[in-house]
Image 1 (spheres, rainbow, N blue to C red):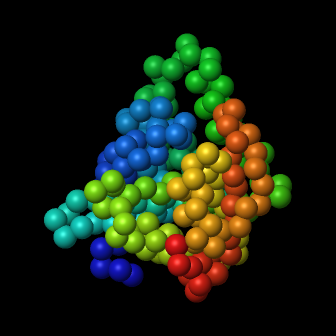
Image 2: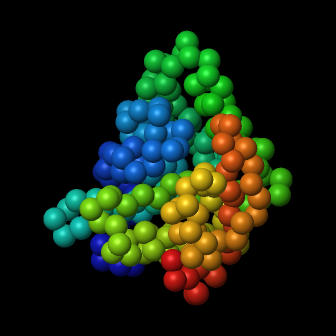
Length: 206
């Protein structure tokens, strides 16, 4: 493993949350606030179905991260099992906002709705800080995650990205992901890409 790559642990959850909020602005989860994101990444770090990695620079700063699930639906269940109340508390401020509650429900339903024809393993999020872009950090994070999928025996992995995010779509295409379908999610068209993780590891130039 690259010397700068570290497993995503609870220690790095706050940094991952900050990177998510700052760099994944079109995603719904960012709108739920930094407290929710912190608890989410702390949960992913300890759940059996979840894993991730961070890029830690020489000065200790976290420049990028990736979070994944070997089974997204199972991961959501484990998140609530391990940190249910801690994850829910930051969401209580939305209890009277029906539009937000509807989108939370849609997010929870998403794994079941896409599980029929698509892989259950998923790249949930990836972000690199603005000052560290162009250094190949995203590429190394993705390759490391794909290696872990292979180690876990996963044959197919998906990722969902807003169809209007040209930079992200091109990144996944360069990494070897193939467009499987486009579906509406939270009222927006989402491109869902699929890849054999071993293929990216061997041939990618993302």
